[in-house]
Image (cartoon, rainbow, N blue to C red; front, side, top):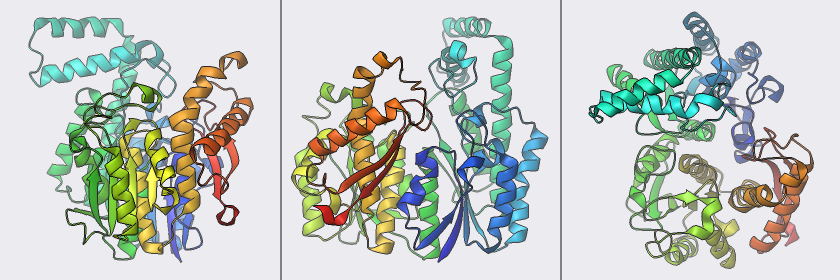
Length: 507
């Protein structure tokens, strides 16, 4: 049995629990820090304890999949709040050298985010001043970037910059920009460790990407540094964040098993491959290539040679949110053929006998309920090698692709993880979250950002609504699905924590 040490990006289920649920613990020993070390949203994880735990665990390990943001800052949100110095960054990262001394044969795959810059004013996951100045900070970076590129030549743009600088509290802006510089320095240090063969492979995920602004400026700087250090084949930069742990574990498994899965890709619309997904900076097909590469596979155009057929559901033009399902435009109806998409899935499974993965990125933040209906009607839900449809396009692809690749290794469909995706991505993200927000929260004095407790009234309501959703929309498998636990990890409605079992003999 292979032992892989895993340091998650934070304590939310998508980062902390998904890999353990996806990869069979009877065949693979994934060891991670106890969740008590991992912090809670804005509360940093205990980086000293995590570092010491890591040194103890790597001695007999085959590989390490590591969030450098957790190692340095204690999680993704603390990476936007810390006050570490350059010297403290150097000291904390030096543990990587110690790890290699303890276990020179250890394979280290790491990921290290570039700090995001949301375009809205909210301090839910940012410093407190972002509630007041967030939109202005984004706009300032956006305009300065465009001016530097010669895209804003009008004097009014420069005047707007002055107005923005005067409108933002100086201490707040200094705090924000200083942290960006520190984090950028840390990103470059990670690349140095890669160049010096301490880290074996690195992903620099682009969290909430945009073409212009502070984050895009940092991305250009990192891309340039990767080129200067000649690490293009070892350091990937593409949109994503919360899925990367699964991607890198799968890459490590492919490496250890000397496998390189070949993936054939088919879209639900002829034009879907050039759609630019929400929160991302490039056309969909370029991200698809990176997601396949990062997991250890290759994209090919010969379906007969393919190990996996990846079916990508996306509109022909622009993506809307799952909560706007009934506002679908022609990109979803006239310019996309969902019936042909499902017929092809049926053919690929039953005639071609190929594993089929679905990346359902048609809507932001949840499943395409019409696709779920068609898959249910054809009784295909549990015949898929994988399915995902949560949050961003890259979150979805980085879940579905490793899930299908793991099927290749085990030749077993992980039906409980597949059922979890239907309950969470279709049930919660695609329908129940919005319904509960619209009908259940206000009478309780709750709102989207605050439901008071992790396991309280809101989670009980959500579980009941999910059970109803399963009965109504997953009728072919509803007797097999057991929702054992429901909770709200950060006491808000954005994400949900679920324990779901698929019970084979109850249909």
